[in-house]
Image 1 (tube, rainbow, N blue to C red):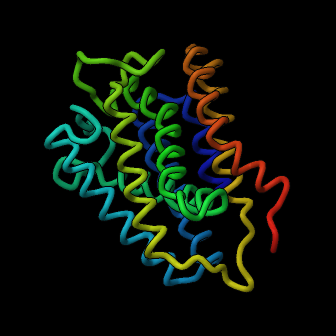
Image 2: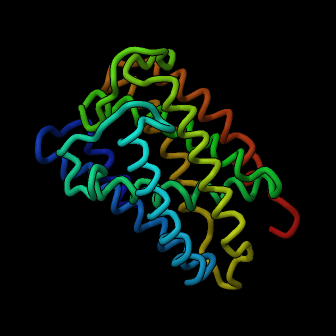
Length: 242
């Protein structure tokens, strides 16, 4: 996780091939960190099922999205994201792998019956920070026209609806298929807390000081903070059996 964060911290200072390398490497490092945490917290069966289900779900829904415009809207990926599997860069399913485990952990802690709704909301909020950066750097090209997200002129409203739907569907599948019991000697949840907290801090800081987009920082930061608040309050106050 430290390697992933260090690579992300370099993002605003680089350009060209160096930026491309750091962007892709940071995603792979983050995905590996979450896979390791999944294994050491819940065991090999959890980690293997999680990685296979998430990878192929992400690849399938991104292929559908690029080909049909559903559920995210009309978009395409730039060749700078590296090798592609048909129309989707190989690195994109690893973004989902990086996200899905910490989001599932947070969702299960906050609610058992509605974990898929809470998880989908976190995934949608995360993309309020990331998608504008991808659009600015032309990593993802969105079609013009239609209603846009407030303060994020590059991002159509349909993308948020799509991420909410896709996030809810993936978290629902993972919630019902993956074991819920931790290993007796499992990893702490610090890596999950750091990942979720770092996303908020970095998103706000970068948009204010590096991208000169304070409205995005406040808008996306407020939404993400409000959605994550129940999880962090739960971690702070504790739950029976912790």
